[in-house]
Amino acid sequence: MQLLSALLFTAGLATATPLNIPNYAQAAIDSGLALKGLNALATLSALTRTGGTCTPTKIKYRREWRTLSKADRRKFVAAVKCLQGKPSVLPKDGTVPGAITLWDDLAYAHAWRTFFVHMSATFLVWHRYFLFTYETLLETECGWTQGLPYWEWGLDVNNMRGSPLFDGSDTSIGSDGVFVPGRPDFILDIIGGPDPEPIRVVFPPGTGGGCVESGPFNDTVVRLGPFPLDGTPWTNETVYGNNPRCLDRDLNTNPLQRWSTFRNSTELILGYDNIREFQGFLEGDPRVTTEKPIGIHGGGHWGVGGITRDPIISPYDPAFWFHHNQLDRIYWIWQNLDFNNRKDVFGTGTWGNFPPSPNVTVEDFIDVLPHQPAIKIKDSMNTVSGAPFCYVYV
Ligand SMILES: *[C@@H]1O[C@H](CO)[C@@H](O)[C@H](O)[C@H]1NC(C)=O
Ligand SMILES: *[C@@H]1O[C@H](CO)[C@@H](O)[C@H](O)[C@H]1NC(C)=O
Ligand SMILES: *[C@@H]1O[C@H](CO)[C@@H](O)[C@H](O)[C@H]1NC(C)=O
Ligand SMILES: *[C@@H]1O[C@H](CO)[C@@H](O)[C@H](O)[C@H]1NC(C)=O
Ligand SMILES: [Cu+2]
Image (cartoon, rainbow, N blue to C red; front, side, top):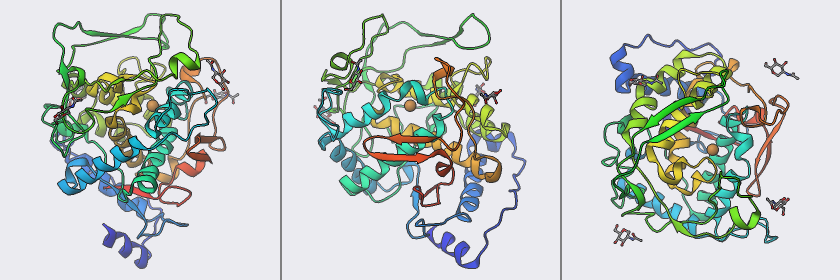
């Protein structure tokens, strides 16, 4: 890949010609071959746009977890553990009394933006910047110099517990949660669509439910939250206090098989040419689709379960970052297949536009304070501009 990018660079193959997307057979779509092909096309396309400080030797190649060597997987796990052990850098002014470590800071950075960066115009770009923040911290604080690894859900839809990411070995990010039998189905009533009647989605419980049993991160401590929805007032002391508990998981192939298969990701990339629909279907936004709620985004969150399905503090699970990195990859592939027409945002700055807020434009800013300064949304579109991003997916 490094060689390829150097070749493209020196041969001056930069071109704005729209890409020729093959007509993939259903079997290629279902097996993941099509998605691989689309990724390769996107990579070639992106590498024609490198600029600024993002020189070919600086580009980070974000890879699927199981393509890293075992030694590198152990190195990555060690870097995440290192980050979890760094002290919080949030001001000690009582806003987040429970922030002890940098890991708590990252959960907080997500928590206080939750109602502005989901079901809103900034969903994809804000999480892109959040991932970059994490990748940068892993490098500057803990020496991980490679790209951030992602999780291809399509490889695990039939066996989560056997996944190299979740098998509990020392090259995984820890096991399933302890199995808790006798639990009822999960019932989600999604509101905010055109009908007053909610959209109902039902999942059976997964194969865990309790604390992560073995492997790396079975000692991860969740501190902030929970965020009660029964009317109990949220104060900084209660929801952002130090309330130590274990990291829980509930691995579940059901949501992955329904929402996050190779077919689901590939059809999303090929099916829509505008950001309103692309992002709306990706997130299962009920204003965009009543037929396909949840989306590939929800599929991965529910597939891991436990704290990962918490809309506010899901970043506590290292799995969150793998999942969102895959989402950013799907977004990135989609963008790079027709880059000049896929650099805009759609929607407002609040969850489901509640409370109503102005339309967001690419001139608006996103930030991950105090870890990253504000950047203009339009600078988040090209991941190889060096302003600030410099990565591709392989
Ligand atoms: C974590 O898992 C290891 C085995 O991988 C086990 O020895 C240890 O007791 C577990 N710790 C906790 C807190 O569950
Ligand atoms: C939390 O603290 C911040 C700043 O210190 C303050 O603006 C905010 O109102 C507080 N929130 C709650 C719910 O107490
Ligand atoms: C996702 O793909 C599977 C087949 O891989 C299919 O059965 C399911 O209906 C798809 N879900 C959506 C929301 O399109
Ligand atoms: C916001 O965007 C919507 C959808 O494109 C559009 O209908 C509406 O007029 C916009 N509002 C403003 C104030 O520009
Ligand atoms: Cu989020």
